[in-house]
Every structure is written in C-alpha cells, then in structure tokens.
Amino acid sequence: MKKNSSRKGIHSRKSSVSKARSYADMGDFWDEHDLSDYWDKTRSVRADADLESEESLYRIEKGLSEIIRRAAKERGVSPHTLVNLWLQEKVQRLKTGTNRG
Image (cartoon, rainbow, N blue to C red):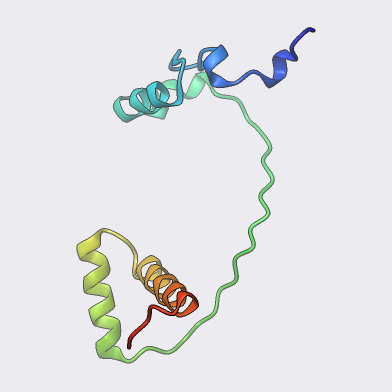
C-alpha cells in the first residue's frame, strides 16, 4: 500500500531551514538562530484560528492590583496571565473540593 507523502511527519523529512529531523532538533536550531537571517527562505501561508476567548473586566482594589503587578513581574509574566493562572487554580480547587479558604 502506498503511503500518502503529504501526511509524513517531521521524523520522515528534514525541516526546510534547519534540516532538523525532529522537533527537538528544530527547537535547538531556533534557540541559536534568528529568523531574520532566513527571511528569504520563508513563504506566506494562510492560517485560520478559532479563538474561543472572551475578555471580561473586573475592578480590583488599587493595593491588590499593585501586589499582582509586582508578583507578575517577579515571575516574568503579565498581570493578566498571572491573574488568569491564579483564578484557574482557584476554580480547579473549588471543583475538586480541596479549597479551604
């Protein structure tokens, strides 16, 4: 039975720029190289994304907001990301009944 060549995975062919044979090797290559050095080897593609994100705004006391900003900066993330992570953790605890406070 003949295999469909358009469905081959990264392990069966090299990456066009890095010549990597695995995702790990590809990641290693791009950790050490800059895309701007290879811009002429790129091509335009069309990508559709179905994002199911909704933004809701909530008021936070000024002092609490400053604490969140400092905590986010210490962790190297945005305040938005940190608040979302904390809320996800809290919701998960509520779902599992492990929340005590």
